Amino acid sequence: MSLKGNIETFRLSSILQMLNYERRTGRLIIRSSDNFIQIFLHEGDIIYATETRKTNRLGDLLKEAGFLSQADLDDCLALSHHNKDRLGKTLVQKGYISAEKLNEFIRKQAENTIFNVLLSESGEFEYTDTEINLNGTDAFKIDTMFVLLEASRRIDEVEILKEQIPGESSIPKIADTTGDGVKASLNANERQLLSVINGTSTVRQAFDKSGFDDFEAYRILNSLISLGLVDFSQPKTTAEMAKEVILLTRRVEPREFRQNLDDLDLKRSSTLRVALSRIFRDAVDEQHIIAAVEKEAIKIGNSPEKNALNKLRKEKQVPYMKNIIELLWQAINEMYE
Image 1 (cartoon, rainbow, N blue to C red):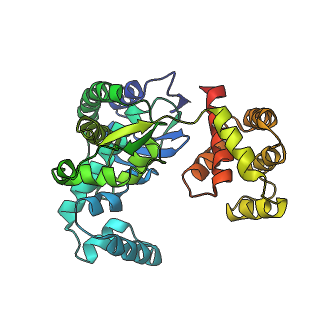
Image 2 (spheres, rainbow, N blue to C red; image 1 turned 135 degrees about the vertical axis):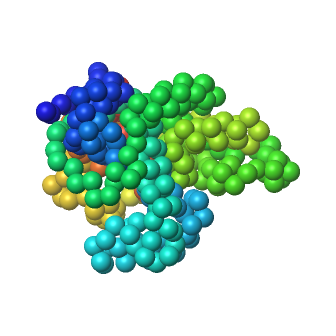
């Protein structure tokens, strides 16, 4: 059996319920603008789940729990790559964690992935029946119905938590009235999330940097807001960003711009590279640049180039380039929301 569609039309919870009821064995893939999720099922039960979003990678979970440092993680990742082994196997062999404890974290990783995907509001899914080699993974099978019930509870709670937050694209900042006494009373998780709030990263970017799953990140952010430690900057309007681009690009030579594009590893034939070049070319005044952005946004739309653009948004860029990228991203989302 194969099944595909959009999660705005088909609820993922209903899909997982159906796969569980029919005792299906196969792989469910969910693609969104900033994540790629794989859920493996055996006779209806979830046995493994992964996502590309950094916050839920096994190494980051273990680092967050204090089992290893960033240097330890980097060494083990390099060794795993060299030996073509899984990271978990390397960590056990090096003595950083027992096999039993590793299985607990693999289970936690899978559960977090399911919870995160059930919180998602957009994306494409595809399920295909396929043989699954358990290879010991049946030791941490996850009861699908238990996960769905827990996810339902979390979704209800997150909706309440979201009420204090303008949105994932809003920009949190440390409040001007923050006192050292309040900071000293924070727990380790609150300190960790506060450390990635810099007044320029969005809520989503801060969550991705923090190492927490979405549910936990929302809970901690609400705690910081309640303590008066965090408030929000007003996002720049399209006109404000366009004006900023005009000012910043006045002294940028075409050769410098082309070098900046090369630094982004965009091929000369890339649709995204061509789009950014045309927007730069039309940066004569606000009206021209906004028109150019809207024209290029239509071409990129929901193509794979959109994922490449979103990836660029999360990387450090020269200021004028960062604003051009953000203008294009906002225009695309406004067209397809």
